[in-house]
Image (cartoon, rainbow, N blue to C red):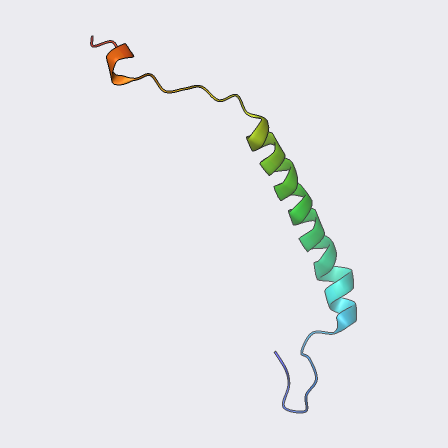
Length: 54
């Protein structure tokens, strides 16, 4: 947000020193999680004719 005099409410210093590292950590964790998801084994679901009825 911008104040009436045109200044940002949060300084660039606060953004880069406080929030940017948190965002970068979250992005790294998301990348790691996504890579693990893509490496998961994929098993085909059985077709109706292959399902056992008990």
